[in-house]
Length: 297
Ligand code: FE
View 1 (cartoon, rainbow, N blue to C red):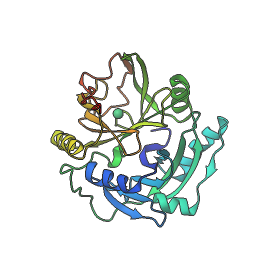
View 2 (tube, rainbow, N blue to C red; view 1 turned 120 degrees about the vertical axis):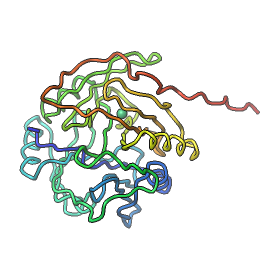
View 3 (cartoon, rainbow, N blue to C red; view 1 turned 30 degrees about the horizontal axis):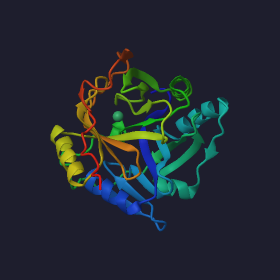
View 4 (cartoon, rainbow, N blue to C red; view 1 turned 90 degrees about the horizontal axis):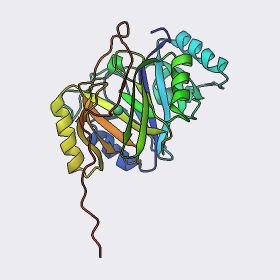
């Protein structure tokens, strides 16, 4: 696409409990460890890329996210648009590129303060990826690692930045009232994945959730069983979204923000796509799971 971004390349989470995250990424999500760094940081594989996720010591939140650009020239052209919009863009370092397993990158803060990077030249793995838990494998590679939902000062401002400056395309909006909480989300695409990025309003973390998608419905069911067996806090039961058609559930990561584990997401054809608005977040399901009342002593 014209903005030069090809896909969601990598995501890094700052975490307090590295051991809990290693168990979560491998046994719950079914990823594999790619690198272990001396400071305890770890990186994880899910597909043909040498790595997709980084977990680094820090506060529990999104640490940075990398949009994979077509090449260095495309990344630098986009970086110029960002700096022309009044945002300071910093050069990446050689050590940073080695950690991210890319040829290079630049970084900046979006208008809501989210740490964003434009990267080029990802290192690909020599061996195909095979998950210990997800038999069908992840739907990633050229569609990117998945999607995520971040906060903005207000949804309109966030959408304007990502569409007008960064060149994302609007897929649709969902606006509704969810138990007294106003939901107003913009879903944006940069390739065939229905959305690689969605923008909500004010949120407690930078990140509301990130999503990984697998290639079979049964692998979502098996992941739901694992989530229960591992004692994960299920935030939303199995359900289906009306816009991207994702069949999924949500649970809490060891850092408090959520993950979505899904299958069946819609692939959009940008030539024919008409943005619409939906007035419900789910067609069915995605319910709060009833929990036993805490025992009184
Ligand atoms: Fe999602």
